Length: 626
Image 1 (spheres, one colour):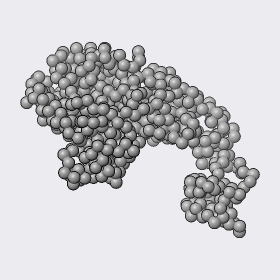
Image 2 (spheres, rainbow, N blue to C red; image 1 turned 45 degrees about the vertical axis):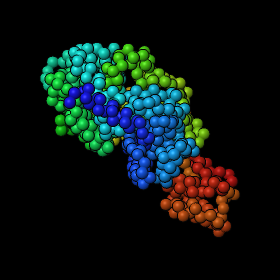
Image 3 (cartoon, one colour; image 1 turned 90 degrees about the horizontal axis):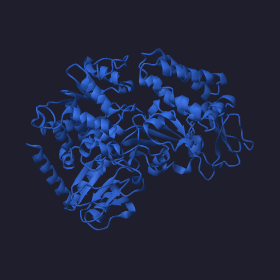
Image 4 (tube, rainbow, N blue to C red; image 1 turned 120 degrees about the horizontal axis):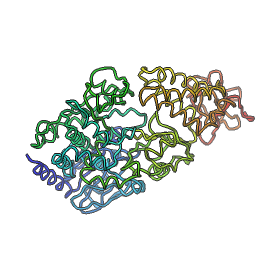
């Protein structure tokens, strides 16, 4: 079957769907965790019970993870509506109200949007989408990721057809002129890497997609693989053709079962349609893709460690040069790019290098995809033009910090990134600006911290993760990060000295200079940036033995105010796991500080009308009225 026949069939089926009322339900991991599968089954049962012809279509991540499960009711003759936090109890109301009737149930809606005839639904009209520009995420939440026809109907695999009619050098030139930089973290120009691999002597060559997403709070690659796997596959096939490579691999962690399942299904569909495998679309070019599942080691996100893992060896970085484009997998020239990088290739070939280069900044073209997490109102997946300010990203897109709390900082670039303060929120989101501020773009994780976060504790948390994930090959990374972690632990326990600050910074700089791979070289970033921007908090821990955010357990204590405590209430007594709270002869509650484990349960369960439990730092700062 020719591509034209496949495309015609796909468009016909897609248009037939768009002519009838149908229901889209987000069934990526975020939606499933919130109960989307139960909601989908309930919709199907209720629609069937009422005898309505309205298909229920499972789609990927719509990005609004804070509002899952998400449901969109698409009506061809009316506006469509997006509903958030949908439960099975609401399904009957939605089916009777808007699937079968004309009541859009706007009291349950997140937003509405218009649908042009024969087109997929656009994003709902919410304030956050005024600041977004969805290109990499263009299909996410709009198509069924388990249907190749949905992808083809929206132009999918058209770029592959065009590429097969071009010389490899033409494709590489187009990628270079687009200005695309690798989205895996380092930001190396993709076209330059492609050219180096193409020109490298040696056969066979290999193409690898790095989907080993290990940063805490990051889920960009997972969501893309679960929502739009064919865009990544198409990008990999184009890369294979440009490199003259017969084999590709995607290295994805085993903790992503849905991503693995959907990507594997997409591979079978692409091969059945003739887009993958032997003699692709009669071009004479053959290319195969294999899924390699990792065991979850953070260091395997590093290129050389990843390749060793595919080879069945221990995942440890190696000395470079030679670089992987010259000697990578099994010692052969290897092109390795990130999920988002490969997903960008089809749209660059489809719309042109000039179009792509017109988005973003001079040094960082295109868009950036971030996973917003932490102390932010609207957690989820966002895509903005490069150059968008952090402030606009956090407040315009993410809805700001909940409960009227003051933002303190934002950790960008994963555990090896840096923590930037509120004063730098006008920093543009691009590779060069973030590096200049002491952080890095990374793969796109962003964790927002508010006034209740302790920056010493935050640095300790990220460094603890890095230290545990160190492969141990480098002395500086293996022992240096452990020494830094011990110093931070002393600070958090009130045992630090000011001279330890100088040692901490000296160690950080030595580790940066002496480590073999990017993990070790960037490991000190959380410490260096928190010391640089939040030195006053470090000094409070060292000089005053006080944690300003009231987080570090060794530097805080809980007390019950007798003038506020209700003597008949036993909430704190019943919930204390250490049995550290007792009543005196007047039934006033007293906390035995020698037994208290500082879990905070007493403060959480104390009725708000009493608000009798307080937390203080330093621990001996006993309130006068206690």
